[in-house]
Length: 402
Image (cartoon, rainbow, N blue to C red; front, side, top):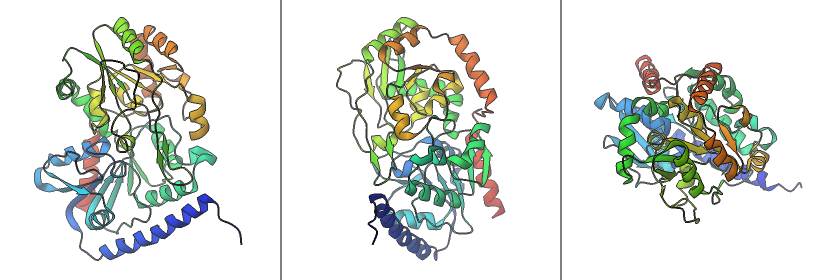
């Protein structure tokens, strides 16, 4: 008898859970649907009030008591508006609320084995528009079998997927294993950058006790780990950035006094309490436990990242982005070939601290803006601050018809 590999054993265990999960969805499916109930989830429950689902919920809340909004969350200490029902993301809570809601909104995958009823509507907003990292089939041989099964299952449930560009619409069938209705709405999470930046710029400074005249560099490295060939792993290492040199370079080039905000990915921040940093730099604030990345971005003046799709979000407001990819070769070997040649993008790319300082010193705002405008035009990007409104229109139109 052939001995099963570790991956095959893991898939077998997941398939047993898959059938158990389906059984309870069918069981709860006996219950009537709640016509006004919409269930939200972000980053498999690890996210709080954040990302695309947050801004869709905010738009729905403008309708006052028209909807009952339920949010599944792993950490019940996360803060939500009073008119959103926060529910612990346990198996039975999740199954009950998803089985009885009229609409689902998510930015990540549903659990393997989730069942959607005929008169339910699932809108998948995904957690990135344009991005660096290969996803789905674009990972080639590095795309694990279990990840394929989970992705395929979720995509079969979805009634529509939102897109912010012609680029995404073209690639989503391969990235998300989705061949259904793709709607170009823009990214709801980018609405705050366009509509409310001035307000949030001051609000975040008050929250973190930062002087109002201080400038902020947001350092937001991407998620590492994820679904490999067995159990999920989430990990990080201390950044090699010399933050003291970084601040000096920004102050010299752009003037003013600068602070650095450190921001972990939500699924990593849910596992560790603080950003790993031991180099003793000053004027640094760990904002990893703040729920929403784009709220922090709206308060920032510069973004520094490696392979995070946040780079493509902040250029909507022409924010300077400096890429720091000191592990580019290792990362692509483990993750797969990036979706862009990083050196062909409007951003500068540094592989070490010397190059990062040089790129800041050489930054030209006028040339940068021209490159960004050309890039957005070439790839059919739609970000005009009305994405949340468009998504809510889609939800309301479906509810009226059903």
